[in-house]
Image 1 (tube, helix red, strand yellow):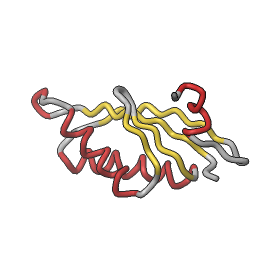
Image 2 (cartoon, one colour; image 1 turned 120 degrees about the vertical axis):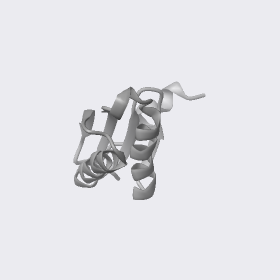
Image 3 (spheres, helix red, strand yellow; image 1 turned 90 degrees about the vertical axis):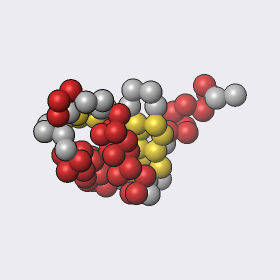
Length: 97
């Protein structure tokens, strides 16, 4: 069972005040390519996996957004870590019909 959940909100600076959505989309593409379980939500995206792997994905996300043209990024991150295991499904099952 995975040992971590990591929620991330990427807030990119954009050249000339452009829309941030294409930059955020690029960051989400990095998550999609990683193969980890994830869920996109309105204000953040949550990933499930091993903590080291998730932190490496965060680094790749930031690098990808910079390569896409952002001059700087703020990444807000929340981590739930439990060596015995943690899952998105388990945490939200009582809220699902």
